[in-house]
Image (cartoon, rainbow, N blue to C red; front, side, top):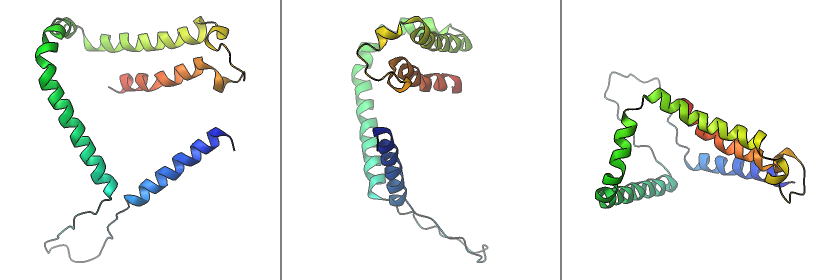
Length: 147
């Protein structure tokens, strides 16, 4: 088994285990619904509670960080913010997408293959760093296209 197969099996295993930990379904009944219905509180796993505490702690940390550094950062970024507020938002989106797509095209077509992949033993597309640069930039493009 190569490393890619092991990675896929590991991801499948973790997703199945997480699903089993958070499994909690309610059965549907054919009882009279004119009575007051009490819905029981869903039981969640300890992983959910742990993740909830981690997220709440992180948000509290960021809130405190913002209150601490806001007086320092606000005078620095206020001129940048006022300059960018005058920019028409679709043009800002087009420019950002253009920068990402332009960088991807430059990496694939503009940079010499030998320079990027210096010292590479296998000559497959999976070991080409230009390919992985493009793959790693795709989520950014998807976010800009969505929002």
